[in-house]
Length: 360
Image 1 (cartoon, rainbow, N blue to C red):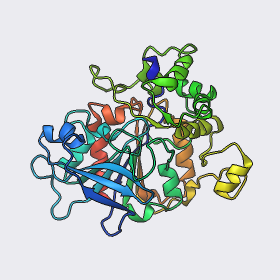
Image 2 (spheres, one colour):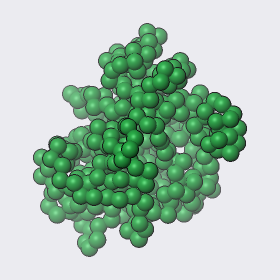
Image 3 (cartoon, rainbow, N blue to C red):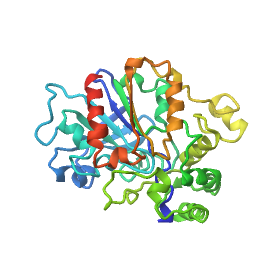
Image 4 (cartoon, rainbow, N blue to C red):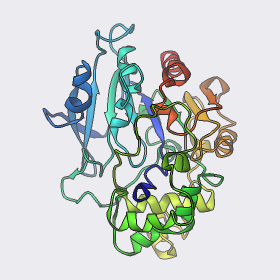
């Protein structure tokens, strides 16, 4: 188990309810792929599911799944159904939203409530490892808050829900995440020329295992994410881990140590100048997020990754946001994984979330 300890250093769960009036900057194609997530996770539960391949403007070939209707045709919404994009967090993929029973998994619940559900898996994961010319370990990352703050997606998003949001990380209390950052594990791998960080084996797991000689890694889920209260005790949610670019891990470690939300630091003034036009990486300007964008923030009192103090810093930064356009959902007993794997998440989080989407 020690080999997988950095599985969930960051999980940013995002659901976008997007308007249908704006064209996205990628090409989607229907793909009749029998070995994909649709057949593995969705069709077996009695839902219609479509596999799609998306080629981004920079050549990455991503896997997406669409659940256009619920089991009985899809909820109370009549006419065109509002599309919702579910984006998983680091070291996971779209299966995140389908892992529990249909009555407990957000992907199925949204479909049953009349939403046109789209599931995305980021580049480098099992189902999104293709590129028109590059290999999967070519680095590339785009943080959601960064995208919003630079107005890269706000014009195509009607509302946004962030569950267990990670933005500021300077007060993150997770002993394992902080120990990994302070030990410069990701930097060591990057300097060794390893572009892909795979928690399931290889050099990454060996270096990470060293951290467990300093802290108790017996209960990895709790050490990393906090004492989750409400998950199915018979299931391990660290079994299905996905690799990511080592550069992503270096970036996260930088922000944990510095407590800032900034772009990747090349640790070389010349390289920073080349990429950013200045000698230090620019910070993401959270206050530039449109004040009228409806935002749902769900966070928990026991979360060791999305710490309540860091979330409060985020809330304070958004103090100029239209108060009628921001909803805060605080659950004292929830830790990080409860928001997607909690057996009572439908009542605690998803029902208020669906009400938010219906109103916005």
